[in-house]
Image (cartoon, rainbow, N blue to C red; front, top):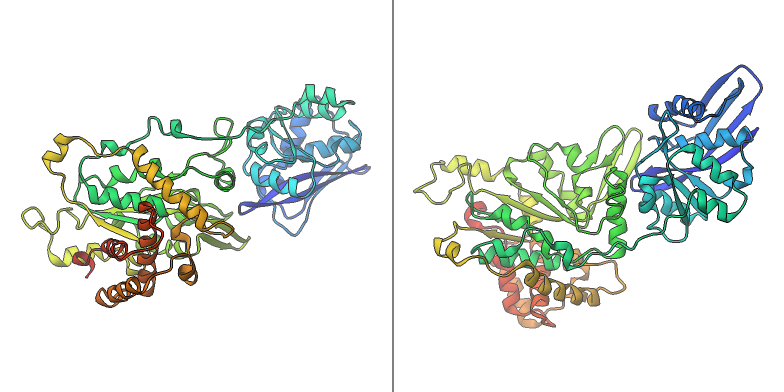
Length: 513
């Protein structure tokens, strides 16, 4: 007997439907699987056979053939187990085939018939809804995640016997009793979500760095902080997520899709509601940073999508790791090509970096710094010019004065966040109907349209271009940052003082010339 059951597979953070075709015929007993399968999918044969036997189902001594279509796309992961098991039961006549029509099945089977959590449920359910699938049966741990997608009934299952009971049910009431539909919970976050998080009120002094962090958060600009050990660089960076705008609905789904593909979602956190904060160690490899492997998976920069990527001790990162960020910083996505195919992951993150000015950390204070000039230049040279060119704001921190320590901290994150949100609302109005979200997103070709300059301001920017020997990229970055500074003030147009302040935050010439 022949049957067809729907499952889903991942390609990057997108998905496509897979038809699991099962045929059981007379012949020598065997269980063959075809369809361009990875080793973990081929191992599904043993998992399914043992799981069905332990769940009380006897497989007859016949020839069983399973095909995963389309056969020209490589299938990976363990999420096909449940669909294969249901297809075998359908072919054996354990339930009416109509019961599984327009239903997608996802899940890994344990040897006792338990249905275990799998990766990528959210993008697969989203694709299923777009293709007209009416309901999806997924592991219980993934049910709340899948239920975030409207237009499709998502049901959580704990074991394959429960799935069979659901398919055998004759009425909707019986089906709801066996396996109720999971209702999507609107995942929201407000100011209470920041309780217990690091607060800017704990930062003493460093007004310039605090101001730069506020501008960076308001326009989603990249930020570099330079200063000696203990000046507060890491302290400030860890508090930036607390002043960023909360994720919108579509942004939540984007961020959750990446986390789902990476296997980081679950019952406790089905939907990501806070902007991500990733802080990899400086020994991170290029593949771990950008994503990859023999079967590509999201890297750190994709896990930081719509959030903050913090690189502490910037010069200690490998040169090839830093240079691998150049293209994602411009294109806001990363392309990974392997022999098994190519995938694209989103990587629209805010880059925040911190570094010492020299190996000992005290340059240019010659009373404390013992690093020779060549040693300092070599250390600073680990950060390439193209990376510096992609930094919107660069600020130098000095040791905190004792009077600042006695005086306590400055404004709280809540106060700063209110100004950031005000600037963000202006950007929402400005970019309504476009693909832009923040000032940092504006293409150079659209700066004239969204950030017009008066005659005096244009002359000022041209003078800065020649006097500071800026690149075209730096020229446009000053323009964007000035627009954000103006938004923080609620100014309709960019003024000369906004451009001058934006130019102040270019990389320090004392270090890089």
